[in-house]
Length: 408
Image (cartoon, rainbow, N blue to C red; front, side):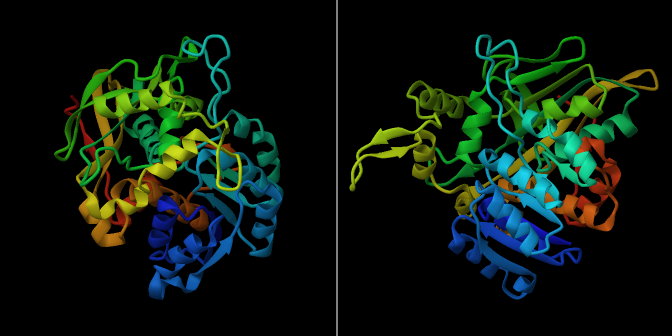
């Protein structure tokens, strides 16, 4: 398999380190707007780097991306950029006749009049509008294939197939006990994406009502995470699983809740109150005259790069799917989860836990596509495909998943 990886940030770089150890990969072109960053990702692979090359590429330039896919004879585009670039990359892969895989879906837009009650443009709507063209192409666009969304969706399908007869609720629950020495505020993942998903109206799905929204940080609950992480307060956050799972898995209710903490929530609210979460450019003085900048980009530039925090970070991160329903007529609850210890991921791969946990899942998916264990056409979420091959291969990668039935 020949892969065009677009985005050589923390997740993209971690993906190269994981893929370098697997035989399915024929060649990976590592592309980034910053050529030096792409070259650094390849150089860090050392003796494993002969199947990798670096390329400067603007992810917003759809035609340039299409040409790169054709010129390098790529089978699939792996999108490791932030969600702003989903649609040009998605369309470029469609036009080039290749497969496509991302970890975050096309952006949403709140309802203009009732943002905390009704959905406007939902996450992924722009991509699903092109599902017919993808089906006609005979190619698959596998969307939301990171850890959350991604592995969490695989867990949902596994629960439906093997653990439950009827499902009342599927709730994605994400928590961690990670700390970063020397920083009072140092998000472990892209602050651009974090602001987007945490300050947008969260989406909830109910079978009788469909998709609807609530206020940010609504419905707080304390969830007890496994492997020493312990109780963490989680709140509703906008996330792709709520938009994906109901398309393929029958459940009465689907939610996503994230363990943010009061301090983190307070800082996000302050950014919003000051307008620093905005992506619209404002004009500021510059050395050569006025320049336009996005406040959110300024915030991201002022914070440490999450990919560089691994040496200062300690603790574990947990992604998982809580499911409540019945099996053989009896009530059942279970939590399917994946925990990564930062000390392990740094020692084994030189990547901090959150970016490594995100990166391993698309690489597993690429291998399943390469071997034919996963096949399909159109725009598909992870829950549209059989879960057992994925979970078995994830374990073979040296990162097993867990199941706990004594939930809460």
